[in-house]
Image (cartoon, each protein chain N blue to C red):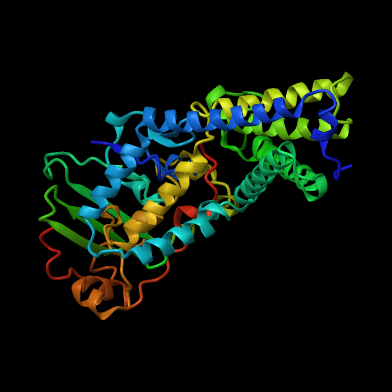
Length: 278
Length: 161
């Protein structure tokens, strides 16, 4: 069942040209949405202004090779494995399932609509949708703060807050149901198909209001944060240093005097318990 | 002046919401990022600044203790047992790094286990003293706590404060 290309079944009723046109329109909607978002919120202007400020405060020059390795580590950690969410393993896992599910689902959709052999793509399409549905459902019903901390019910929604995750979830669930019901456009299958397309259209055309653009600006912010650490500007944050470093001990003599040469580990601090007292 | 949040750094974890003594750090229901809902009620205790795992919260300092445009940032490093401050003037001429030990007890320890404590007697209930009050102000077993009674002494340079 999961090895069947649902778009091949669909092509009996809807021409592949229309399907391709739809995919292109959605891609254009995303590009337009992101550009509008960047211009309207002035996020690029803020980003470059901040980068310039950091460069002015830099204590050392970061070579282009170093910058490249920082970019690579941003891709391997923050982008590919969502390391920013590491303090919350459940959220990280659900984010990984949602993100990878979405990427695989979109690539497989594009491949099959633009004529690739079903083969591995059909399986990937179904597995991507499944991963997206599980990760997205887990986040939507249990992890997001409205439900986990604010005491709201899952159905108490806000448009801008929830349109992204909800359209992802609805799209993946109804894509699977549509495929499993025969991928046609009659009866129950038609209902599933309409909901699938409505959700995907909502997802790709609401970029300017939704969280969609975070997949572009989050990596940029993570990279910028790494650069500020590497060039020593560190956003005006202080140097903590190592407490057993003689230079630190002679500069701050009250530290060894009060606390010994190695001040004790004071535990996890506020991170010892999950913040749930919203 | 109050705290503000760098939106590109905040991940909406909610630690600042938990720790704020004025209960004015909230999570925006739409953007899921922290913000100060009542800036004029912020007394700059820096609790949220120290608690933020991403250093996403900053404070615009009052002009009466430093010129406008300066920066006062802090890292509370529990693992190393210290709090580090950096004070920088607008033109960058003053750039102070300060380091102080954390003087509170390790977080989460020494929490009184009230459930294990015996219920107060009738006499205690009718007394004007609060829970454990005689014990902690030592009315019963000596004088109030002093540096001397605790075997401590002032360190040179501290007297002036």
